[in-house]
Length: 113
Length: 111
Image (cartoon, rainbow over all chains, first blue to last red; front, side, top):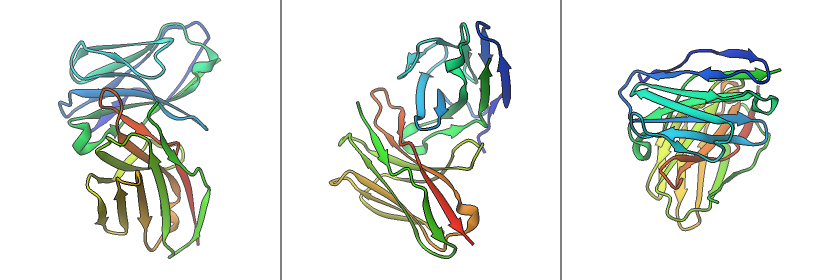
């Protein structure tokens, strides 16, 4: 089975801190995605990547950046954390979105205080 | 803005009944449709996918697709308390090939 690993299950950070959320997949997938999930708002796409060193903005990229230096690793960066970035962050990967959809990581629940 | 709509629920059914979950989508060009199950505090897991009009069965789950009506549904037969979760409908239709998710329907199966 594909495994998508998010390095932290729970994180608490202070306002203004730079926060790194790491995601690693072990199946050589080219496609990787970062979403946040909030009650009543559902899953919203932040950034995605279809290849190493490639990144594309999703629907809500403001306040975030990403890095993909290696195929298996896709990092989400909160440049200066704010309380409105408190959320569940979900990483996903896919070999072919049309055929297989996504495999999600276990999620990181981030609280910014 | 391409959209996927689901009734938020909660949908409550007795154990052993059929649960019917519905989803509509706005992009007529969408080709791939997925159902994810998400338990409270967990991440979504894929349970069904469908590409062609009609029904697709996998165990107790049946996905139904009607592209003319832009409608996709999930039936769960012989519902069990362990089926209690939020079910997310997802459609591949983003401008760059990503999945667009509905907000989910919360299902509660009562023993």
